[in-house]
Length: 299
Image (cartoon, rainbow, N blue to C red; front, side):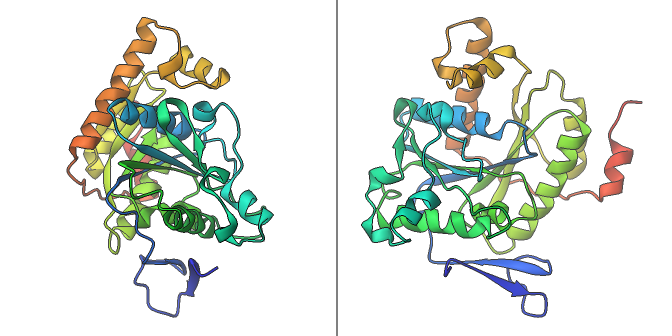
């Protein structure tokens, strides 16, 4: 497990703060691609957001790679129409001799040419998700898959404390946070802001902005953004067509035309164009946990 080591609190803390730190291989670089890491509370819609954003980038003519970083390994199933084998599953079949693998063993074609990879994860309680992400990036580099890629999207698991959460921050240019207009989602967003702030001391990653999901209103998100220094880049209402797209194993770009579908497609295309053009990094200051209770809610 050369791609990941842990450091005890008694040693130097060059990689953020904390009692146990994840130390990632600094040689694992993603080349010239623009790299985005999508974060948010578990179940908030990160995979739906990531997959449709990947398609939007592909509609702009970009070569896109989406990497699912959750042991649930369902990040790309609307793109591929199935749960593809994970990198860890495939590596186990060759006793972790990566030189025996072919590209098509772990990279799968998705809708409109999006390349799909599911990192997977170790069995529960037996390992670190950060190691899995590191091995996935290493494998992609060994097979030269990152050299001709324009955009890489990491769809990251929701647990802030896990190495699997932290590992994509080594590679990302911008971190995007998916949230809903409710207390639990915003509370999780605040924790994510704190984690990204810590990692930005040593990595190039910066906050890119907020994606409001399943939200007709954004008053609570707006209140939090104004307080900490964030801004909302896109908003998706709680539309039934989005729920149905998941059930149909389809992206929103494959659904039958309707005003709602067109609305969502246009918002994703606008978001992709904005991200490709480049966004200024946001300097946010996370709140104390108890202060969020005082900030949010209805008067």
